[in-house]
Length: 203
Image 1 (cartoon, rainbow, N blue to C red):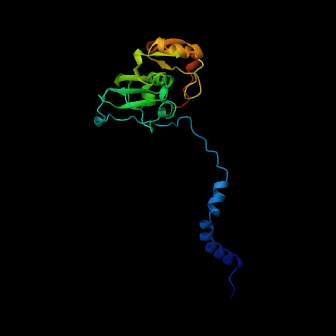
Image 2: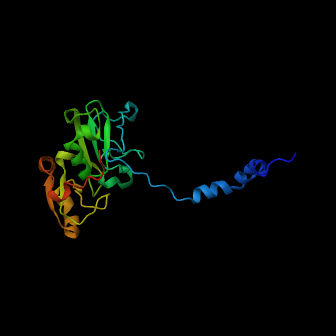
Image 3: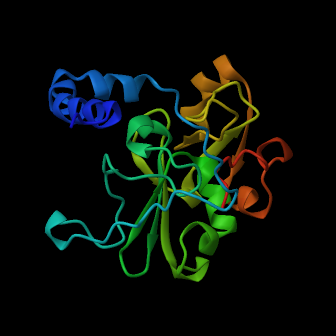
């Protein structure tokens, strides 16, 4: 008695599958299909873990550290090491550090520490540093001067607050890009209105 046509076709397909997979045909067909759009809920965010103090570094626990390539900004999800001259860092009293991609992200972060680093509070912060835009050296935030309302665009290609060691260090940049200087104390009280809504990462 002959086998039904459907059974024969199924058997032929099972025999052919390994060779099709080996040729890359199936992988190509799957890859060529358009990806289905998957909605992302508003409360989904990138968790950016802190980095523990490493005694082997030889640095004091509250000293500024170099940004690891894998560090991510808890405010926007970017990699601060890729735009090092804009980077900032927050060091907690236990030596853990959180790296940020720019002074603007830093001041958003300082307003809501527990939102961006769950389990942490602003009272635990021992030191805050920003990178001098001109030289790249780490500056204690309270000693830095920040250029606002300039044409310099930060890592997010939007308005920002580049930091400088002094008013004199900022002069060449102000001559080219405009802007006025302000302090960390003023920015902690209130960010300029045009920068208040520039934190793009939802939490």
